[in-house]
Image (cartoon, rainbow, N blue to C red; front, side, top):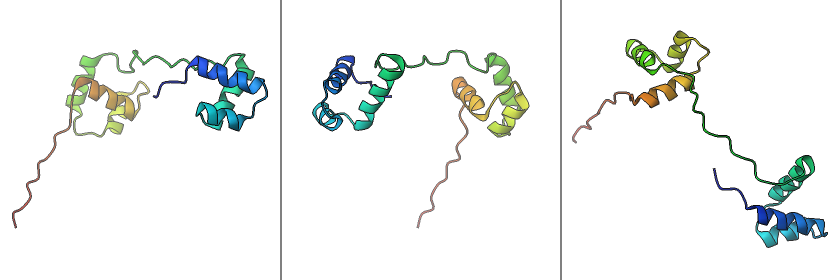
Length: 119
């Protein structure tokens, strides 16, 4: 995700709008989009401030807690699709949870090398 605009740029844009300058002029001068300025103004009305939203931290609590048990499960059901594995595992897992767990274990699928024929 790209870095948010700085607080001082936001403050300058909001102050300029408060002084009565037109949105179009502010956007051209600050090189921001009109939508961005509108979002800042909306956030200021709703919350009283126009700070950038704090990003959510990455998830450390994975749905699959016991990786050893999961590794055995994957070895046992290696012929199944990820969706079928999710249905078999239970515990309200999705196909994406299975995919994330497999990636965390470092398991990749076997690729068949196809040799091209010589002409």
